[in-house]
Length: 398
Image (cartoon, rainbow, N blue to C red; front, side, top):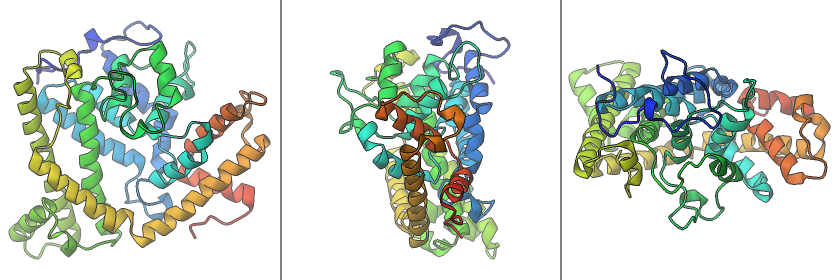
């Protein structure tokens, strides 16, 4: 199949380049190299033992950040192919989007953000940028992965512009302001924070929603946080379930779950493709720069599917993310994050030796960020091991 059939697709030969210039590496394109660098990064490997919703010890069949990222990449790449976009850039963004997540999922992020409030806070998207521009240290000539402008742009702006035309922060940064790592990097390598990102980045973002929602249905049912019958009145899911039961009466539970989930994914992807094609045709887009200049995203659900998605997210929030069993575990997880942070802040000798080398005497904010980098990079398992080592307590999840 011919690549880049869409006039508004990103093209690697037109890339705005890397902060540190490098020679090309044929036959791979610049975006293929970005994807490969993400896959070979230490942060990507650690996603194997980072939580989606369930903590790692609860079973091997639940999603982790790694399996989720791979599933997002599959949905994103398939969507990009149908739309005639650059599949490699889309895949690189899908694989990199969760690199900055803490152990213990969003509960860990909330706790670390609260602990870091006096020192600039914590945001997993900003941490992803920090990882790929600073914390990965493999190459002789630079820190980070030295990714292309387009990949970095998509990493920080996949949910839309970060500032308005006057430079004021938008979205969830509106009250707290932009994280310092984004400000500093944009000063050196202008990511055009007031514009939308490429269609590829927008596809990766909506693929995240599709994979997250659909597979949380799967995990929630496997964990018995809710039952199949509870999905009957949920738009889209109920319809898919009804269709499965009609075609396959008497089908075993595990197959019902899989057949329902795959229909949900298919319906959402089909809807996104149709709506995105319509949006781009109506806008008469001729280049990726015209995508960035638009005042709204090009990749969207149709209004009806957006409403179905909203109702599904509300169902999952009430029946899964706020389930008493999940909340209890996450409350314990937040205690682990809090205990470790306070211990490291009070005694720098507790940090590994290679994490102490950059400590600036008397600079509390700088040191707190080092602690944050170390702690946010931990897997669930390593965080529990460190808690047991420091506090001589059995893991809190037994």
